[in-house]
Image 1 (cartoon, rainbow, N blue to C red):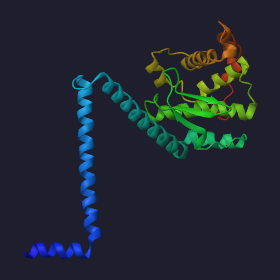
Image 2: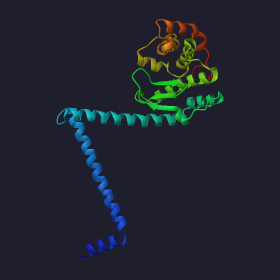
Image 3: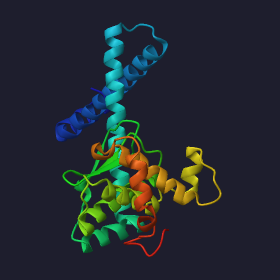
Image 4: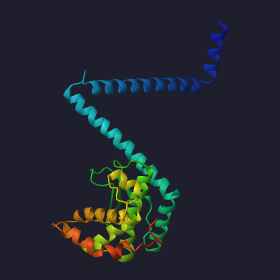
Length: 245
């Protein structure tokens, strides 16, 4: 037996666990490389439309959608957790919510997939929804969290009746005005370029859109009327902020 063979046999006899661990690592790496290649192969076949049956295409599409949804969910939760620790405005709202009798933690902010009509939502029974598939940036998540936290603040502090069109309209005006939802940069992206009272116009427009989704306020003209009636007093009510930031 050669010296190298003797050394290998000696090492193996002295530390069989180490050799087995190295073999396991090699096997895992080999399987990982095979999985990566298989994913690449399927992706190429799906893009080109070659080599996959209709059933396989449908199954692969479902697999892609699940992978994307899982990625969006993890990213949404990470951004949420970071903002609850480091965002000045989110931390400010959390403090004021606690003082108003509510103390939300991260389990009250649920990352979920949504349709294309919203970025978030608030329900007194279910908390705050963050639409994981609708966010373009961490700042977008921040604005959405603050918007929905204004609704939660109003619910805790003022005992809002969400079936009342006037109550709902007031909270929507405040949330749009105070959350950053109507910042100039956001409005430009939406295609609105007015130079005078753009913030007021945005808050009014977005409040109307939200109130229209309330089944109690969906009749033609109702949302426009109630928003107009509450707008001045609710736009100027900046609590818990000193002013619109």
